[in-house]
Length: 295
Image (spheres, rainbow, N blue to C red):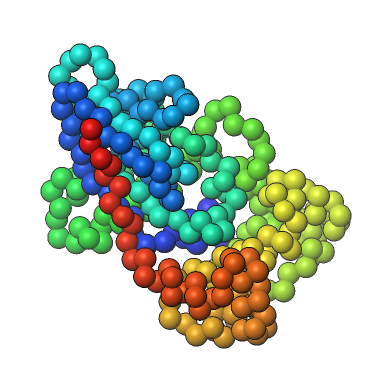
């Protein structure tokens, strides 16, 4: 089981959004705080990203910037005095933030992936395809663009997990690559319905119950059974958002013996009953336009 793909699929809601932005001369575009993940790709030219309380980031052609927490910010002209054109792709992914996965909580406020010769070939390929589809949409563009945006997010997170310098070898970055904890996570994600025990998960990794529990909690941030419950209810939330399955079927797919047991656990974790959660979230079909306001 690919845990990263599983996490992305579970917390994403609605359809991702993207559009092309062409800016000339002196300009500024403000982006309000957003309950999701925003991104900008620089196709041509350069610009600056301004975030409150931080030094401006200069973005050049080929650069990608990700705002994993939807932080408010602005893009401006580079301030060089040269009448330069900047061609950008701006977009966003909507997240279910009622129980955000801790993997995404480890991400920084801003992740800047700099262009470099021969580097990030997968990201570069998706950026080129996205630019083409948004500039001159072809047949099937409505299906192609969301798929490309999903690939972009996956590749960017992969880059962050594997290449970002100076990051502490802790948290989910370490958990996914740890031979013990990573195996336990793959077990939980691969078969969440199974009635796992701490002893069984520890035995899969060749550790005692106590040693496994300490190692798992140190990296993941919560005990094994707490994470198993969290993940089952995350699956339940996704099924409620994206399907019309009756509550007994949702409960069964999440490893609960009865709809009552599932509903009780779900309300305790999400603060709302499953039926009300479904009614609220199934009305949210698309990500709102995140093109910003020009100034």
